[in-house]
Every structure is written in C-alpha cells, then in structure tokens.
Length: 183
Image (tube, rainbow, N blue to C red; front, side, top):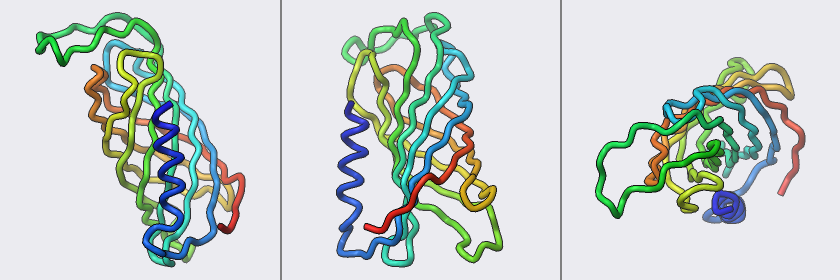
C-alpha cells in the first residue's frame, strides 16, 4: 500500500510546486508485456499502467504514473552468503512489483516528431512479501504517438531493492489517453 501513498502524496505535492502554473492534465491507461531478469520468477509477465502528464510553467513536461508488474514463481533462486541482518526470506509466491514513478518528458509539441523520451525516479515495492518498504530506483524510456489518443512505450526500471529482488524490469505497453482536465 505504500507505493499508492507515495503516488498520492506526489500528486498532491506536484500541483502547487513552487507556485508554478499547471497546464492541462492528460490521463492515460495502458497494458502490455513486461520482462524481468531474476531467475526465481518467470522472465515474461504482464503489467497494467496508469498515469497523468502535464506541463509546469509552460516549460517542463512532467509525468506521474503507477504500474503493477506480475511474474509467476518458478522456484528458489540460488542464494549466496550475506550478513544475517540483511538477508530476507526467500519468496515462494508470484512476484507483484509496484512501480510509482515521476519523470520528465521530452516531447516535440509541434507535432513534427511523434517519438518522445522520458526519465526520472521511482518508488518500487513488492506486494505480499517479506518487506513492505518502498525502494528507490531509476526509470527511463521512449514512446511513440500513434495518433491523437493512442501511444506505445518501452522503458526500463532499475530499482534498488534490499528485500532480495534484484531484477531489472523492461515493460512495453500500448496505451490510450482517456481524459483531460484543467486543474
């Protein structure tokens, strides 16, 4: 539940950010496959994504989004030796990774280039397992507008996670803009 709290706190804090004006807010949803690198879980899973995007002070385009990545459990991973106080119990269930990220988006607003890039920080948590604390990490990727409402994206999540999950996640999604509002 902590990643949702981080998402909500970020959304509330970002609006009046240092007295900046906030432009129209786009609301989008998406889904697609996701790949991860930890041998303890299936390499390919599914993910659901939701996000908002706006422009601050007519200069900086920012996005706040959240995603749930699901991977099946394939068996115990080999464990090396580690100090007793820092080892987490082995997980014996599916991996449900929650990513809540805030990114800066580089987008051509003239409409000439349909591709865009983004990068930023994220809070990462794993549902129903050993440590409910969120971890920080990096995220970045690129996208392609497929018309006025549809888009496709590929990104990378690199999370520092002391709970034992050390994988890197590569989601790909097809998304749709479902709404727009002016705060």
